[in-house]
Image (tube, rainbow, N blue to C red):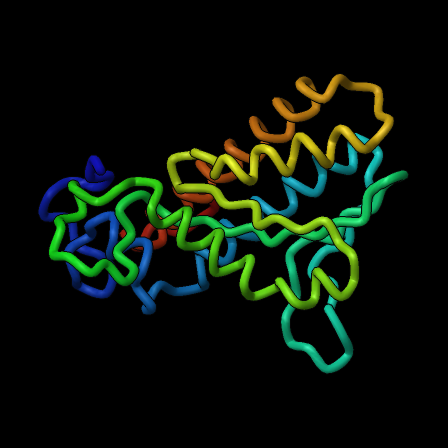
Length: 197
């Protein structure tokens, strides 16, 4: 992965501002990664609303549950939920070998997150008959293939004014723009620059 910030650039916390550190540092002020996530959720939900879906943000699964998927999507023939997750190429999770980040499969982190999210919501989804797929994006805008297929299927269930391809392209383009704006916000926060991304 190409380094975003110049070599030698330090983070606000004093550490080297490598891409991995910027995406994982727990000392970032005002949670810029959460802000990026919220920007993506709102953009994604607004795109679905333009296609005639009703979207509820962070619905509670049960009264006792603390889990909250990001978006409940309701349409004519649709009752679905998704949980948006953003990860980055080269993210080191639980690799067994000592491969460098450059040698790591860039989609490995996306596959890992997809599997984790599916397991997290599996029992609840099955018990409630929902169409669920995590919406997994990389910080470079790449979408996991399962997320792409799920979005096309959801859009195909709704009678809206756009073709499935146009609706899909519109939602993905706007969501990608939100990811990139969110990345700018995260990197600005890492360098101590204030203001929206």
